[in-house]
Structure formats: structure tokens, C-alpha cells
Amino acid sequence: MGDPASERPSGRPPLRVLVLISGSGSNLQALIDAQAHAPYRIVAVVSNVADAYGLERARRAGIPAEVLSHRDFADRAAYDQALMQLIDRYEPGLVVLAGFMRILTPGFVARYAGRMMNIHPSLLPKYRGLHTHQRALDGGETEHGASVHFVTDELDGGPLIIQARVPVMPGDDAETLAARVLTREHRIYPLAVRWFAEGRLSLGEDGRPRLDGAELETPYLLEPGAESGPGAGEKAPASS
Image 1 (cartoon, rainbow, N blue to C red):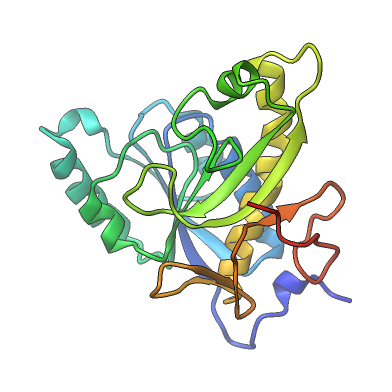
Image 2 (image 1 turned 30 degrees about the vertical axis):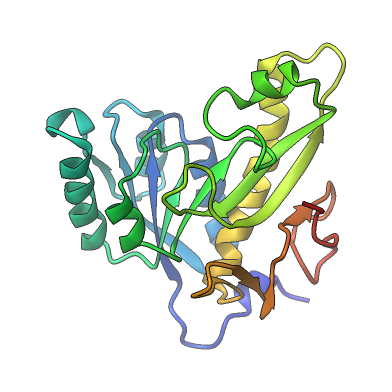
């Protein structure tokens, strides 16, 4: 059987994806690597940090790399307005936040409602915000992980799409735990983007995500060894 990602309707163009970054761009690289076998194409990468290594990743892949520094604007609203103008030049069908370290204004979020995703290094709704790995350790968690969600104006509070869990091991520190989580991030983010590109994933007008026509009451849980999602070894949805 062929790769399900390639089995889109004949003549349907790949989904145009624009990625926003602030740092090294390891999730960006995962998305770049996955697009060779998926119905989406990254049309641009934009960073608010001029020396973000993710920009170099984009250039090496032949993807336009743009810098729009927030330091050049008087306030958050002015920056977001300029950022929207830059994004819209590329006419993306999906905006992907991959380590974009900016809190977005409600107007920005509303403009891309239902077509903007974020990845967060925790099992949301636990540990929103920063320093999630140390907080999980301090909280005595036995498992940790990552979540992909649609973006709303609630910080790390948008509707959940997919999660992956990892064990917290004896002797873990924030760095070792982060590395373990990152390997799972690199699986679930391309998968969520692929589902969206295939038309299988959407956010309903009621604010609830749907996958293959069914409401996602809880996020899908990607288990080790099940890398292709529902219909290809995917486990049942995770419990809340």
C-alpha cells in the first residue's frame, strides 16, 4: 500500500504552510523532512530573531526565510499587524508555530482561526507556559510529553489534536527529559499538519476539532511504534 499522505485527490495542490520560529527550529526540520511524503509544502519561514538557526535550516531546504524583529515596533499590536501582512503575502492555508516565542494578540489569532497550530512540551492542560520539563519534575510526574493544538487567544489553551507521552525516568533532569520529549514532538507535529493538509482534520465552528468526520473529545495519543496515525496502528484517543 502507498503512503496515505500521497493519496490525495488528483489535482489537489499541496497545502501551503508558513512556519513561525524564534530559535533552533528542530520541529521545523521535522516538518521539512516530512513534507517530501506529505501533501503540504512549506512556502516560507519567518522569525522574530535574526540569528535563529531555524532560518538557516529553511535556506538549506530552499525555503524563503524572512526576519521581522519585534524590536522594530512600538508595541505588540503594531508588530502583529506587520506580521500578518508578511504572512498573507505567502497565502498560506496553515500557519504553524514552531517555537515562536511571542504571545499573540487576539486580532492575530482571529485572523488565522482554525488554520493555526502550536506545539507545546507538556501534556496539556498541565504545565502551560514556560519551563515545562522542570515543572513536571518538581511536580513528581511519572510521565510527561508534548501536545499539538489549534491556537486560540488562551495561552496554550486551544483545542487539543494529538499528544505523545514519555516516561519520567529516575535521575532525569530538565535537559534529559526535554530531549526525550523532543523526539516525540518530531513525530506528532508533522502528523497533525499532514492530517490538516489531507482535509481529515479541521476545527469546527463550535470550536471543537474533528478528525475523519468525528469529534475529537480527547486528543489522539501517539504510542511508540504507531507513527502514522489513525488507520495505521494508531491507538485509541487518550483519556483527558
